[in-house]
Image (cartoon, rainbow, N blue to C red; front, side, top):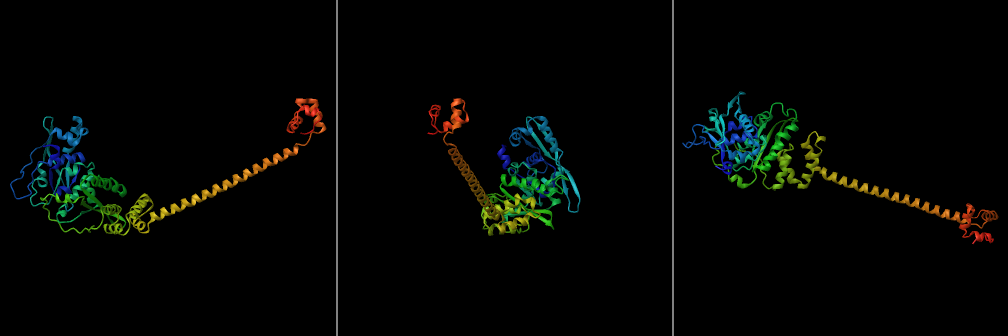
Length: 424
């Protein structure tokens, strides 16, 4: 079996196993899925199913292609990964408040000539093999192999439990979980992000959901559920991106589901729907989000959402602020105010430049006036030589200094002075 055929295979789990807590990272979850690929569970009243767990072999070449060289690059690393996977358990939560644990694997062997050999523990039969008359979830291996986040994996797996709604003609499915139920299902370590809802949403919900939306055929978003101002749970929504994806749903999904009550989004463009989902992820109800994208222009909703998110640290209730901002177009007002402020600044700078120009012009006038005055003074000084000037020039000649300068300004030479001339 080649890699493409493996990715196109479907795996089945009883829904109690979907809801159980699996303490696995992404690599361990991939191994778990690959171990399920050859199992034929008893889901119909037919004899074509496995009675016991057989060995599933993942050849060396498939390990190489499906996991990449860094995963099995040396025997020490491979041994560590397989050991961690083998030690995994599932934790079950019972309605009466009880709990239980099950070991997953009977054995995991690696033989260079064959590959990785996986066999499940018999304790897993009620969740993998003997599923007749139980609700179950079925999906293709490739739906998950593109995901690198364990949280994304568990969110999508939980929502796929409800995919039977799609066959009923519903465009969306939803799942509501309390904070405690969500932490249990997603295997969020005790103490991690407790009391830090912004970090919980960013790391456990927002980033994983972004990966689901980018890498799979599904679109996922969520709405926080509050008691007063405290977030006590979340409702997750999922739709298929394309119509043909709905048509490819497996017919074996047998769970009987109650009617879904999700509001219809008919009439919205794809662009509007995406914008509405973004509003929902900011604690705005689906009904309100749909009304906002229908009533106001795309640009007004988009710009005000961005405006508020950039300033979210200033607001106690971000959802209410976003709604108010969209209705009153805070972003547009801020843009207008900014434009007016820039215009005022330009006018102020122009006034400043004009004042500077006036000042410099005045200074130039003063300088020019000063030069004129100097020239006038010079002209005043250019009177004819006096007797003393003549005597000093005759006596000292070239060394007459000040008297010689007066002589030269009058355009005279020493010979002119000796000849009796006093001015030109």
